[in-house]
Amino acid sequence: MVSGGSPSLGRPEYWWYRARADLLRVALGEHVGSPARLLDVGSADGPSVGWLARSGHRVAVDLDPRGLGRGDVCASVMDLPFADGSFDVVAAFDVVEHCEPEARALAEIARVLAPGGRLLMSVPAYQWAWTHFDEHNHHHRRYTRPRAVRAVEAGGLEVLRASYLFAGTLPFFAADRLRTRLRERGRRADRLDEGDVPGLPEVAPWIERTLLAATAVDRRLLGLVDLPFGSSVVVAARKPLSTPHADEQSSTRTPSGARR
Image (cartoon, rainbow, N blue to C red; front, side):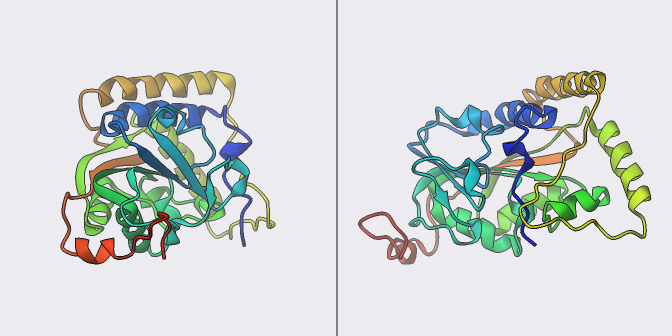
């Protein structure tokens, strides 16, 4: 069953998307540098990547065409239609958990990165937090920080930073997920019709203000330290300047920059 894509396209103002954009910027902004070309994989929705808009020429890739603009590409991270070494930065925010096998997605990202290029990645945290929400959004897994680091390093990249996000809201998140798991115990996930977009949990205005205040604490701490827990994991990584098969990789390039 194919879902209707990310709910962020219809709800860009939702508190979590606004907070995530802010936390991603603080946690990963220093690793963006001044790229000539930036690939935004699976995040055509915009709410979490607006802070990357000034970072060179940005190309978005997504299976959901609704958020794509001129020059963007409707494609899968599992088979990126770009030549080796095409981009200085690849951003993949809440993408890899949708991919099976994850190794292929990370290999494709590493392939299109230029030597010295950076990967900026986020994934959802903690398998104990798995609920029907993950099934509706076609997740294959949730991560710990060590698990995310191992996956990125297995793809041949050097990890520069790895941290949790949303530490301040973790008590609220944990209580909500555990309550949801108890309610779902023994029940199958409701089926979504093709084209349906998964819903977002509604929160009262005072709860939203509390959650945003909690993420403000994260924002201050992230400028100083990596957070030891939280409901998301972020990783910044770099592709080595030289690889054992650099000559073989270069042979896949074409004059137009498209992959053979």
